[in-house]
Length: 460
Image (tube, rainbow, N blue to C red):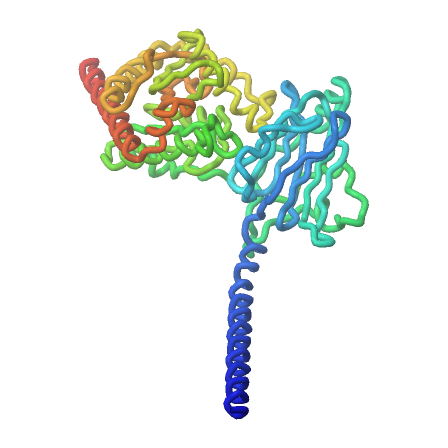
């Protein structure tokens, strides 16, 4: 009996040892698997895991938690009061709604990709302030790397002086080196430690050590030999500018999906050359969108958007097609144009440096031929779209949209629907609805160019 008991005990011990050995092997395997992922984290795009505010209306601190130290630069903008923080392209892994409420000197803030290789955070201020201090802390005592921006309340005069002294360089993307490691600003990162005094704000006057990555330019030799009409498709918003929002659905994402589907449908016919103002989640200033159409000698410019009514302002539904006019067709058109024209302010673009001729483009657009073609396409588009999607009760409108101001390019802006309306939102996220509506827009484009060819033939 004792022998059997001893045998049983030995058997149990053997099983325990085998289980321990197996666990040890699994742990070693996991550790080995973790090594490549850690290497990727080091060489990949930096991750922002938290953004938060502290302080009051006299002094406010903004803190960013990262997985590695990064370069940065910050500057002020006026009317409205804003602070802009430019950093390398990062992955914002944050909950929805971060930045919609502020604290102290900061009313709200927003963030996103603003150029390939560069991200931006824009702070709307409650009043004039200055950048009192800024620094990057390397990881210490179990805390992650952090970028800290400290703001201090000032009067208007002091703010204006800070503004003129700031004179920020043009935004340039930060790109990866040959080793896929981001170039960092030695001023901002190398010596900053948790137990070392922060760097003074004057360090912001020195731009980050960055490499310029020019925007892709179409091959002009190929374009010159391609006599097909050029159609520019402009998905609105992007990057730091989310556009309208309903729950987790952003306008910038919905219209990009529609724009890419429209491009694919048009290109399939082989009759047109299509140029996109953006093909990813990048912020494009309004003036640059206009320049793309002009520089490409576009025969048609189609801007894609989705509207939303503010709360307690009733409900509206259906698609609307807008053309440019110096006088809005109604109050809703005027509201929408004012909202869309603020995109550059949302993105933190310094509008004071915009060429004066851009401000006068509305006068140039008085060229009757361009306006006539825009209105003609808008009517054709309405006729086709109403067969596949619900239209607004007043589907044709006009207002002073800056994005429609190319003086020599027929242009329309399509509001696909209202994200604030439940039924419209269901359509906007539906692939079936998108496919049908894209088809109707493509048919309107065909009809527009067929009509122009007939007109041109008659004139000859």
